[in-house]
Image (cartoon, rainbow, N blue to C red; front, side, top):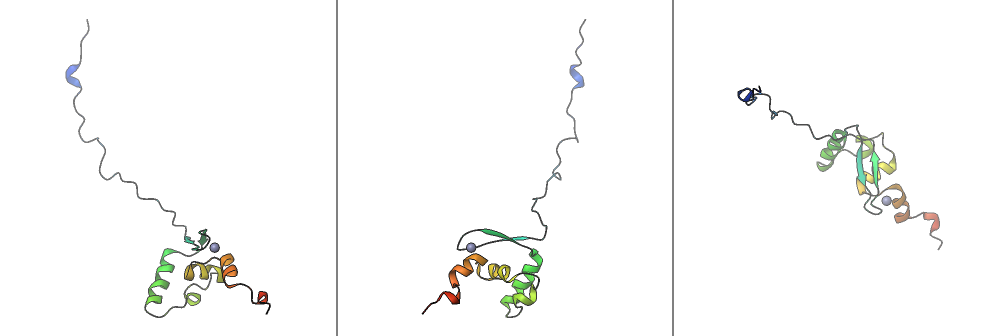
Amino acid sequence: MVRRLSGAQGRIDGVGPSMADRTPVSGERGGNMLFKCRWCLKEEDVPVTQEQYDSWSAGRTSGGAYIQDALPFLTPEQRELILTQTCGRCFDETFGDPDDADV
Ligand SMILES: [Zn+2]
């Protein structure tokens, strides 16, 4: 004697996937930004947050905020990378060493 519980399997309402189950886009906001050197295309980590960068950037377009004032904790190489997309090594190669000019 086999009885089938055919009527017992209905739809289960209210347990389906909910729309609220969205995982946020994960970007590691550790406080570093990547800047790419336009010469060697190498990306370097600069310890500056997006907020710090934005506030400097905003001040810069309105004529103020030198980068060394806004971001004094960066090394000169890091500032150069942000300003001109030139890493320390390429900066040296591009602008050379004055001592090299052997006239
Ligand atoms: Zn470079």
